[in-house]
Length: 151
Image (cartoon, rainbow, N blue to C red; front, side, top):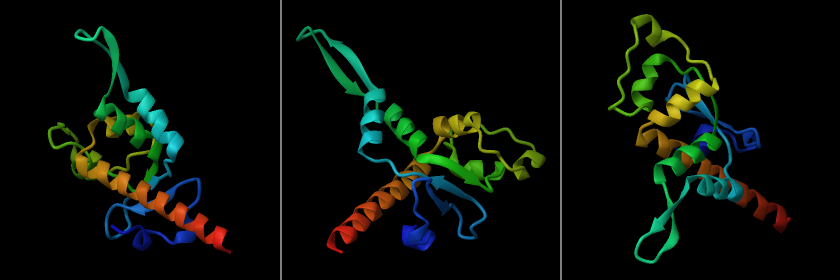
């Protein structure tokens, strides 16, 4: 989905952008802007120090999964209209979801516990969605700054 179709450019604020997940605008997520400092912070949190036996030095390796979850944690600021039935689309297909008919229709409140579950068990499509929206916000911010400099 194109960010221009999802939100009006004037709605982009530091608080985040409301971006619909479905075409009826019943379900959506609030995605924030992740700048350079957020990326560096996520990289630092995902870096593991490993002792290299051959060189007898400490090497740094980035845990990609941890980096992705940390970055998504900083990007995902909330949601609206999320129900149990939507978890099938958002969570990993290998995750077992045991919900009753009643729970499938209930709203899932935005809490830190629910956010952690979604971050741990998300599927790649959801990750790409959050990343692309965050990147679109970054591109718009740079475009906006260039316009202000020209004027």
